Amino acid sequence: MRLFIDQQEVAVNWEKNPSVEALRALAANTLTISMHEYGGFEQTGMIGQSIVRDDEQINVVPGDVVLYQGNQISVFYHESSWSYTRLGHISLSREELRNMLEKNR
Image (cartoon, rainbow, N blue to C red; front, side, top):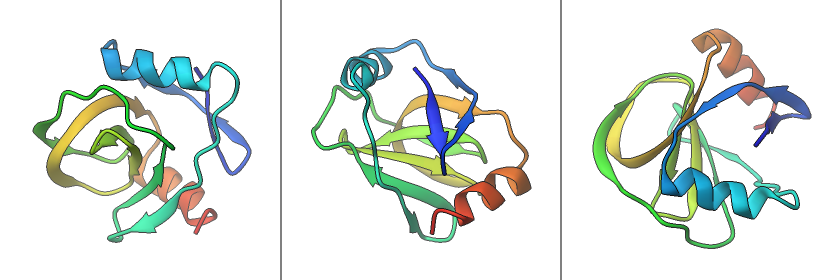
């Protein structure tokens, strides 16, 4: 599965869990998620349907990709804490990720 931000491919270390497998199945024929700024620390967007989730209270760091409420994807460029399902991690610096996501505002 590949992730693109502003038409640029971004390497993600995907988790091995049922949520990622469900997302992978949805993305098999291309899945586009329009993202928007939320709270000054993340970009988030609707998947278009709910998928399996295993939420737990976690602390996220820049680069974390999570599932929120089973139907939204969030990509973080600052720290936060909430109930999410981990999907993966982008290995870019906070500044690199923030600059890339800010183009998408």
